[in-house]
Image (cartoon, rainbow, N blue to C red; front, side, top):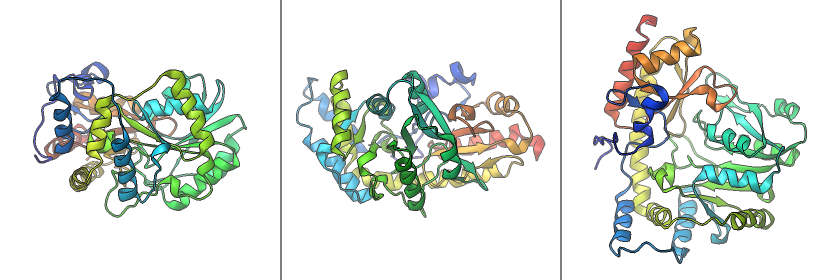
Length: 389
């Protein structure tokens, strides 16, 4: 199997391909699905083999000893990220959107503020507001096509009612790999305002050559307020397993989170655990290395094609497979440039405003697909905006 192998996902109850006409009006037969953040690639063979191994006995009862699963997580974090994790720190949630919701529930009360550096992954705000908490937006600064944080400005925004900060690291949708100095700034900001810091690092394996991800747990003086979130789902394209990890070193925070897990009767499904253990392996590591080389080629192809269109700018990706394209240089309103993408180019991409303040002139494109599709998307977009060239 190579990443170029065509895989037909239409008609498979696939959200990304089967719902794009309903949501975006892009016809299923000729449209290109570049919105939902999953990949059009099969996972490592080890994952499929592990699932087949579950089928052979023909019995699907409660999962028992999860020590191998926990060891696999610890091995991966130490081997790939230099981070030593104690198995007792690990909680398994039904994905990291659920993990975020659990953190909001465990560490805040209704009416409390939850801080987001926007634009940022849209599910954060949805979970926060649905739980009766307030989203407190701290807008990122777009400086020469690269996001940075402005903590002095953020100090003026907060009023003391905030209890939690959710960080996306690496950043979605901007693709930034935050530097150690930037993460130290986040830690200092969280301590200054007495915030529990949730670091969502679901994209931490998807980092391009020339960039290095720093685990927030490596930042000094933050352990007593830090909650780490990681998962196999984005890395290995197994999001349907709905499995994620909330990792908490601090005993007090861990007890508060455990109490909410117990109170809601949450426990993981066996399929997610088996898939994660198989993925966090030497075979999985080799697969990820190959994946990133392939995605790097897609990134370069897409950026070159987009940046050749006058008025369009693709924010340089340092991590993730989600390209963040700014249409403000076209002089068009959001409705017009979105219509050209959806109606003329027939591409479904995420709408920028859903990511919060700062996303108004953007669309997010998923480039984790066969290279021929990326080439086709570039050609369609160049044609849709050909009057600008």
